[in-house]
Amino acid sequence: MQQWKNEMQLSGREFKSSAFTAYFGIARNAAKLYQALAHSEPIRPEDIRFTTLEGVKTIGIPTPEFYVFYNGTQKQPAEQILKISDAYLEKTDEPMLELKVKVINVNLPVGHPILKERRPMFEYSFFIQQIREYMAAGDTRDKAIAKSMDVCLKRGIMVDFIEEYGSEVRNMLFTEFNMEDALEVRGAERYEEGKIEGRSEGKAEGKADEIRIIRNQLKKRSVSETAELLGLEEAYVKEIDRLCREYPEEPDSRIAARYLEEEK
Image (tube, rainbow, N blue to C red; front, side, top):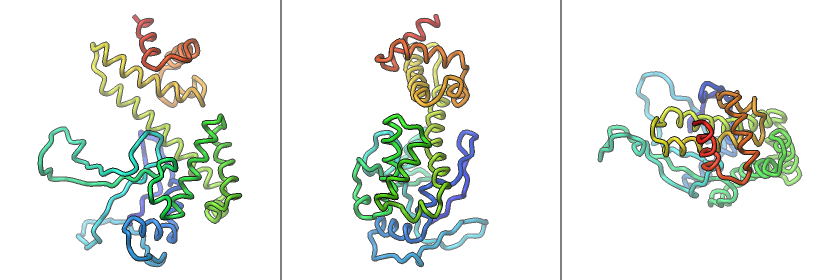
């Protein structure tokens, strides 16, 4: 296994190590997770080694396997194989660089077998699901995290981890949910980069995507905070907010059409 650096950058913003990394950075949890993935004999915590590969000298390494544990909010299958070549603009039968990654959806409602096979993964997924449910019910992010921690402690879930890391857990989780927001921001940036001027249909579709992102952010932030986060003009966000309030039942595509009509 490779130890990830404690910090990463996304769209110019820094994020500290996540709760997932910290939780499965504990040898006993990593051992159980690896055993489930490899379907091997029991792995002892002392057999787990975290290493960072550096330098230019060629060294022998175990055959690598790549996994992504998905717990985002978009609908995804329980398990899938992704290839880096799928993103190549020019397709070839044998690309010179290929990478296959197994993506496992660990969201609790999906019910992937790994959640039943390995308790640490179930506990982590339960924790995240609790936070999302409290937020969906109207709690702020901080309050949802705090309430979920209390629920986990009462039910004997992630007890050692929560008690050992204390307030750090809140910071890690706040970072993770901020990362989801940042990914939404990146989605808006991709729209701006890729839109084709002069095609009203494509512009309306892209505008609907952007309005969806703005709408989601306005559920938990003010107009000014949303504008700052997304890098948009406050007057523009205020206008979208007005339209969403006047027509709360209308889909994003219709709000986009209304805005474009008024813009003419």
